[in-house]
Length: 332
Image (cartoon, rainbow, N blue to C red):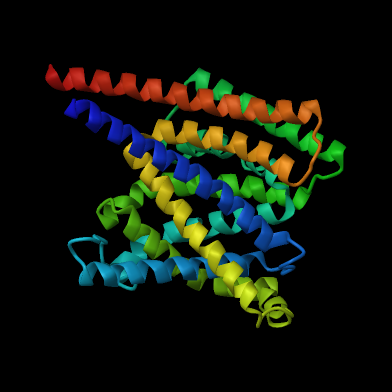
């Protein structure tokens, strides 16, 4: 009886985490879309918006670090200085990729619709296969390569249907591809950088956001966003800063729930959950923004989502097989 209660509690907690990830992830996309391209905010400065979200994340991290010292029995957060020379040298390359990833994602979201956002950034898996081979020398099975080919076909069909509908943003789609590329490189570099922070994702997130705050400053100056922000007519409005802070809170929350979902389930379950969430997000976006899409447009989404799901499943089976073989060899 107690075992059944324990299992029920565990499953309830896992369900809560997955549901929390879905809600936070979808709301984050919608909130960022409102900040980046709504008539209410009307601020043409996506790098500034992303920069401020990094500031909010750092403020939360510092607050929690202080609280962990005041209440060590209730809050456990690793402490570390991002300005140590050794830490800076080893983590900064990853932080540059992190900055590129979040910047390109938000620029993409500014110019494309929420419904097309997932398809516009769907080439991450393809870039993972390419860079894993180029940088790490690891080959990929024919089945996974076939899934990548299907993803590319679905991506091109989606782009074509956006063009037919007259809603295609070449600039936004280009940054979606760059976002997929930077995310792929970030994922590969992440594995090499985690030992530097003792596998602590929380501490690494803190370092990434601190460095990103600095990196974004010259980028905003080069792009001219400092002038745009200075001349912004709502800069002194409390509503604007409240909306920006909410966006920062959601940006921090999605990072937390992503890590938590992987922790309580598995990377495969996270991928499946993310794919299903993207499907729900697409349907919700078309309803919320009252968008009518063609049959081929929906087919492009189904193709990308299905191929991505199959890729995740095939890789999981391959890794499981490799692990069993290695285990047998060690026993022998």
